[in-house]
Amino acid sequence: MNNSYNSLQKIGLTEKEIEVYLALLTLGPVAIRKIAAKAGINRGSTYDALKILQKEGLVSYYHKGKLQHFVAEDPKILSKILARKKLEIIDAAKDIENIIPELSSLSGSAPSRPVVKFYEGYSGIRTILEDTLDSVAKLKKKEYVAFSSSAIRPYLYHKSAFPNFSESRIKRKIFVRTIAYGAGGGTYGRDERKWILEKESAPTYILIYAGKVAMISVGKNDVPHGLIIEDAELHKTQLAIFNSLWKAI
Image 1 (cartoon, rainbow, N blue to C red):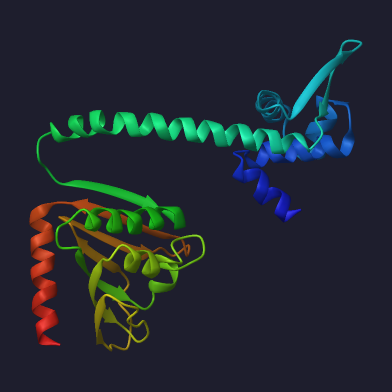
Image 2: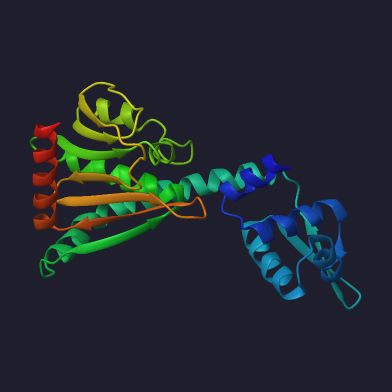
């Protein structure tokens, strides 16, 4: 059942919508009261979920007497829905490519000032790491530096974050110098690493790149979070600190 949940979430269904759809598959044609009871969701939320499922083509309905009965469509229709979403994504990608120059010109007209962006969860960590590679790849000298943390490192390479980050960096011919706090980690290609072997690892992973500074840490709830600060002066300061420490190790 977990596989069913994960797969249905990937096509955009919420937990409540999945519960309602699975309840309908089990019950067959039935009124909303029984669907809500089976799914363990109140009637208002069940009705909202049914409207979404109807829009997606996963649920239909008919009237039996004064009552409206709902029925789940054959699960085979999921393949057609997935094919439709693929086409929508392709069309959206084309549209986005066309408007990027226009949107970039708007952002370039704003006054120059520091920008801070906050990210949460593994998807947010992946966004930070992707921004690092994308930003550095545009530079003439494709290089960045980082303060690594043995405590944070596993979160970066988690299967839900960016497990093949080093491979992607090497493929894009990006060089990195790293000062690592705590044992572990190594060189993988196009990189240099020095260690500061303290008893405790630093609680934050810091990337210094392309006029930006990114910081990644983990809260008490074991959920990673991070931020990107876009500020040329802060970048220069952090890079100077890094270089001084690099020479001293």
